[in-house]
Image 1 (cartoon, rainbow, N blue to C red):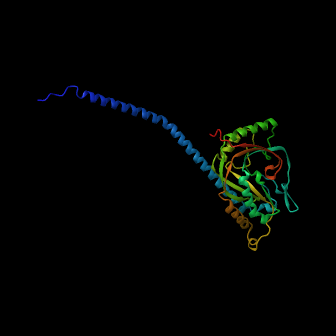
Image 2: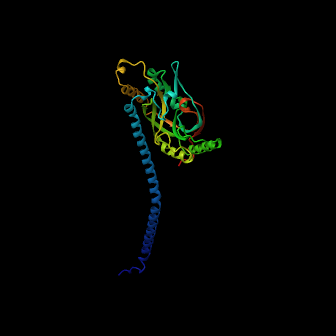
Length: 322
């Protein structure tokens, strides 16, 4: 018979296999532990991103619903501006404009306490084409009874440290401190990419561009940050927190040079056709907003009426975003 197998023939392979098995088990345990430790952080990140997406979507929906409601205003209330109505801030139009030699002129009224407004600025690169489109549609009908917003100061009202309805007096060093705080907010904001959702004519005669946010901070967030650094500001602000709008012009009198077909239209139908023409030209118009302004308006509605004002311009730096 051949020689028998040595007694320790299987001992070495068994030892090696056992060692490998132990290593695999230890590695698996450490891997599971790391996976469990990292999961909460990943879940938190995903939940945070999901929350931000839902919030952004929710704010966009709020704006859409708000714009729908605003667009229905003319049909519900008619063209009140034809009867010398009031602005959205309860100011009489007759107190704001006069007519001289076929020209509309603003009535500038000095304020005891300047309005301190924080606005996002729309540069002339984007505002001039809008202004030209508005004039091309409306001037043939409203020449001499229409006020155009100066295209060099198109803006989006965000937050007021003081406004004419609820003045908040401030001495010079307090104003400077407010401006410094607003500048700090601007450094935390990235430029906003926006798109014009629709043009709306309100019953007060004001023509508005209503926008949606494509990227960048939402107006709700911007207003919240400004409120946080301006604690003495009026609790009641002038505009809805989600709103992002620009005033393009204001109608102040009846249309002229109407065709026979237009003369047979109701007021609502005629103005609706004009707004439809403007939307066909401007809907989907895109722009980038890259400046936040802190404006002291010495005259009532100085930004709207080209009155006296002091402007501090702060670029959206994105340096400490999030």
